[in-house]
Image (tube, rainbow, N blue to C red):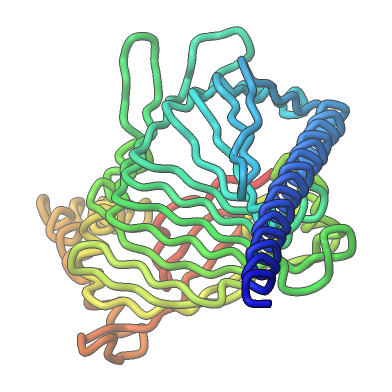
Length: 377
């Protein structure tokens, strides 16, 4: 009996091994079939999205394209990627070296993409007018191409240069830039309310304004209300839609630091029929004197027409008295703002709270005009 029992046990173990092996092979085959099926579906979804975009005048292309990532990811590797936006006025063309987009097989609603620079921006068929580069650029999209729920863009050490013939001028450089957007109410196709968060670390904008050369750290949260939908369209058209619907831009939180100057604030802005911002923010500024010096406010006040008229009259009374008036106007500017504003503290520092007003694109800090905001459409 014992020899037969040992033989039966050996046969039983052999069958278990064979069964386990068959099951393992079946699982691998099934998973391979599932991955292959999912990759075909992902490619079809991408091709369908690209075809719909092409009908709207946005044409995306790859020099070469591969699908990989087996066994747990689906990757679309687009080499020599390009995008032609014929719907823009004027049309623009973007080109970059490579885009690698990936989704997990078990979570196809989250797509992570990596971009390899440089990125060139040009009129179609013309040399680049802008060149962007970075150490690392990533995007993440939660949702589907037709109904995104949240989008994030992250740039490490980005730089943006403007080309003027052979001359290259830096317009932007930073340690890090983050842009996050999500739908907080409604849906893509039904009156979405969109929250955006912009974070800047050591960002410098030498091509924008001399005062923006010194690095800036910023954390700004806004909410856009009044959109009918979030279908693909140029941002000027989107802002026009927002204005026509009586929408608004709520700045719920803003913190900006530059050198010794620190400012926090919030408020609501709207758009007028010319595309200019209208409204008021309430801002608290520490070391407002340094900010005024950076933007050249004192010189602007000294050269303003009312001061010039007063100085001219004083010069007629006594030569040289007008120059004294101009100097005093500039010297007393910071004192005047501090007197007009509400005295407070900000993160342990002496500060003043003032209204930051937007009037048809003109920007006023208290009574002082400090610049212009460009039209958004």
